Image (cartoon, rainbow, N blue to C red):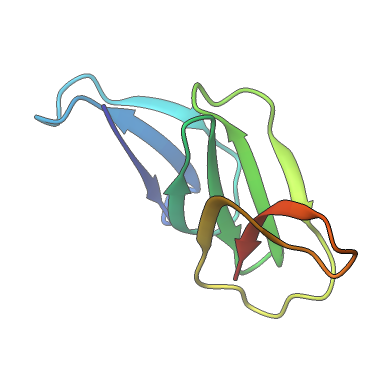
Length: 96
């Protein structure tokens, strides 16, 4: 399966690798930008709402990750390996 975003229609979609079986996972987004996936989640930015969001791979569980302080986020890198946190603990990371 492959997942992609359609900034024009404000959707995130999934299809088979040959392009058949297109399914909309998430709609009603304003302007979803680059999509990144881990084993559990899809992540994307939205430059108009200035958010980083994620959802389960099946499109359920839409969650706002960062909702303030961003100006026109247009890129995303998700690192699944734990990284040092200022508190001294290890935490997963998501960078814009």
